[in-house]
Amino acid sequence: MTQSEFRLIFADQVNKCEETLRMKKKEYTGDREDRLSAFRIAASLQDCTPQRALVGMMAKHIVSLYDMCYAKNTSFTKELWDEKITDSLNYLFLLAAIIKEEGTYEQN
Image (cartoon, rainbow, N blue to C red):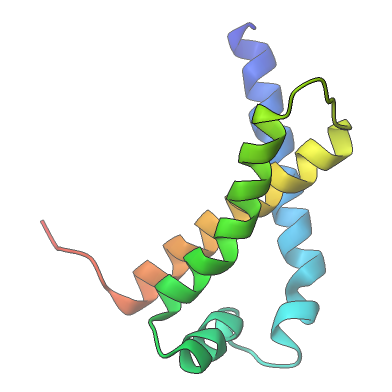
């Protein structure tokens, strides 16, 4: 794969991530202004941090990707691959937002 081909894949994936986050905003936040509210609520229900609530939710997508990668004699549609990869990346973007907002990292 050439560098140009990879750049196109990367740009396309980032666009898919942004579009999915935009489309699912209402589903996951309702009318709340707080974009991360679902993770705060889940954390409260589970008596843990929003970070832990998020990675718990993300685990389902990672396990699904793992299963797809290790499936024998099975192929999957591009749409399914795109969905699983996009969801996994979006959870990482949301985790980055939680970490930044909470300032839960060591300063250099």
